[in-house]
Length: 248
Image (cartoon, rainbow, N blue to C red; front, side, top):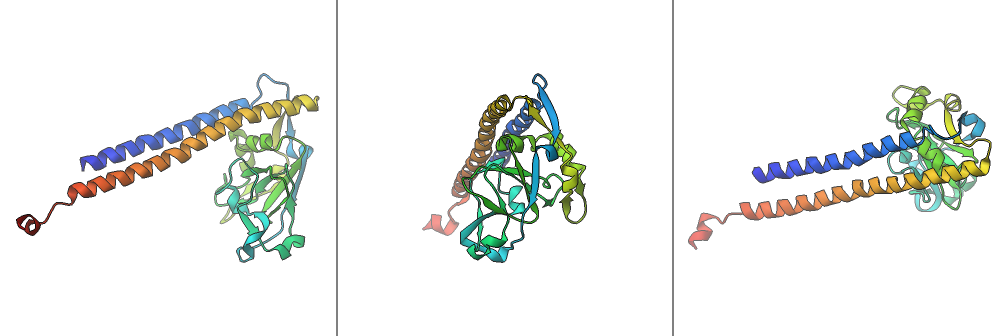
């Protein structure tokens, strides 16, 4: 029992260590994207680009090799802030009937199980276009796509976005409302300087994102490995020989 309690205690401490960097990262990201010491214009999304709704496809359309697609549910369950590859594909004969996100678009979930899931964003940085589900939107713009996606993960943006979610059995994004949400544009009067600042911030956040993900992915694997080792040795310790085996 003592071994078991020690194992659970260590597991709890490691899980705490996993959550701590994520909390620190979110705080730093939110602070960095406030632009307190930089010339910035908080601009409505509708003034920065347009939202393009996807076209419907179903699970029955999925195949091993076909047209790459992003399903809205994958945005908040499988994707991070950005991606250059799609997890799913549908039949090639559907290609003409689908609607696509172009490289540089930010794909946004239109529905979700929770309010926070709705409006979850992933920047599409693949080399080719990708089809998107009709319960998602492609935000087409001329900014740094990863910068826009990082902004859409901030607490401020999530709080503003929540005001434009229709709540029910299915939480649904009200795109007309989302268009009014403002995001920061650094150095709005100098496009070259603005893009350079966006790239600088992306480079910083990419490093933090990679670090927190490596901790989140690496430590659970270590926990699982140690747990298996613990169970193996526990079983060896408790596998006492039966009396008849000792007598023999």
